[in-house]
Structure formats: structure tokens, C-alpha cells
Image (cartoon, rainbow, N blue to C red; front, side):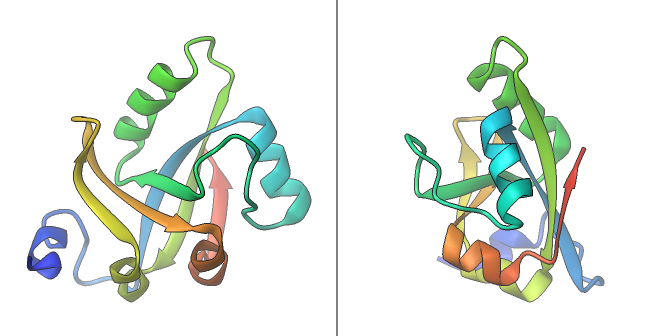
Length: 115
């Protein structure tokens, strides 16, 4: 499978960094702020999934947190590092997504912002 070809559709080839989006519960957000990094969160998957657009992250957030108790974060990573993440062309039938374990994520994340 040619992963590079799959990525070409939504990664800007002329930039150094790319942005990914993740819906998190309030407790996970607070843990990121408190620890200044991603940590393994109780009762959550070890891999952290990220949408390639805010709109897709919002769809996941609305389905995972129907009571609107979530936040959406934007993570900036070096474009070349995205190739080290697991890729799914259409996660849950919603859209493309990337996943990384927290070790890799903490190494490659250059910026985390609340949206």
C-alpha cells in the first residue's frame, strides 16, 4: 500500500507543519494542561486519534460527548513525522484520521491549542 499517495489528498505538500484535531473530554484536556504533555488516560485507548479537519473532530465529539462536555484541540506536528503515525482513510465512516501512542505524540507535537 502506498501511504504517501493516500496522504497527498489532504496534507499541504509545501509546508513544514500540519495540523490535526482531537475531541477530548474535559478531564483529558485538564490532564494535558496540567502535565504539559499527553498521558495515558484511564479507560481510554492507548492510541490518540486525530481528525484532519475541525469539522470531522466536531462530528466525533458530538457522537462521543452528546452532552457537549468536550473540548477540541489542535495539534501542530512536523509534516514529515505524520508518516510515523497510523493512518485510517475513513475512521468510523466520517473521514481520514491519524493515531499515535502518547510516546510518539509527545515527541512530535510542536504545539497544542484549544479551539
